[in-house]
Length: 141
Image (tube, rainbow, N blue to C red; front, top):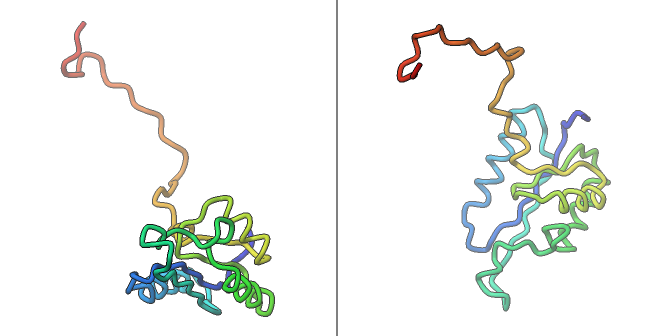
């Protein structure tokens, strides 16, 4: 896997989401804690429109999550600066990752990808010990 040092942050947020800056700040802190540098941040706001409130959290584009104008801005930044990856605040499907990676020319991650695994291997698993005969409670002979 390639080393990821410089990233661009992206988030799609509902117009009703008042803490979107805090969520981006938390993601930036997470990237910085892992040794990365945030080069730029992009926010796509989804306002109330004819689509109604039920569509507020839905992606603008099934492939790219964000709208075509915002996608062009992100792509220009990725090609103009040395960006190792784009990190989305939002969860991404495999379909969206593939399309976004192809369009942006770099790996695309979600915030969930930055969380270190909770399971840390400390070596090979130990064999299970057998209970001594006759010591198991509630065992019928």
